[in-house]
Image (cartoon, rainbow, N blue to C red; front, side):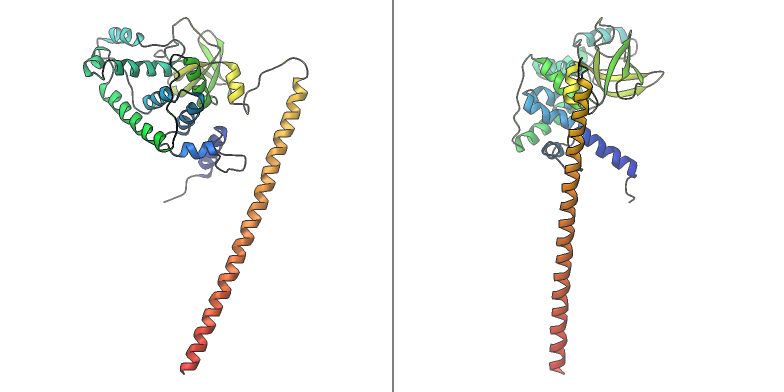
Length: 305
């Protein structure tokens, strides 16, 4: 089996560093150790672990489970308009993630009914899989002594938690219906299936689950977020502009951050040297005892002769 390409390995480590799972020298942080316990994409694991501290783990666990299965809705041929109208009943104007949460909540209220799914053009097999995934995540959270908390109708908390996982996949409104990816400047658009599309509500900032490339770059599963959240949760990419001496202050902060990284690298280098010396010492001790045993065996053989 061949090792993965170095570029892929470095890209993965960079993503984990962005998500605060790794520190500046590539060591697992407490958040990263908690994320490892979940068989999920790192972004979804970060969302779920963060939700415990934010008090919305019950809702985020459902959203993560919904994102872990294929399509939830279906559009039968000849009934596209009716199915779209049924889908609109679940839509939350601020978030596709919250729309998924709404679908699962309504299914639960209707006692996990298969007939209810058929009436609302929802794949019952997908929702059953969601329920199964959610149960597995609940068992893991219980085993890790993570609290399952509900925030009720405080959906802004859930949106901020979603932002904590997807802040590196953020876009800013540029024109009518057009966004630009904040890190790359690439144009991207709301997908027609999004809850935010055609609702008369175009937020200034959004985060998305993934991009779909057709004739355009479409954002799939979008949630509106606040610019302040992006600056708070992704300070390595975003900052809020202030009037006055902000430039000088930013330079001071950059120097402090660089100094911290240098100190961590120096500490890591010293630790590496110490471990290397211990290994060298262990090797010398092992070699000494091996020679001693060999010498005793030779003496014993000589005596027998």
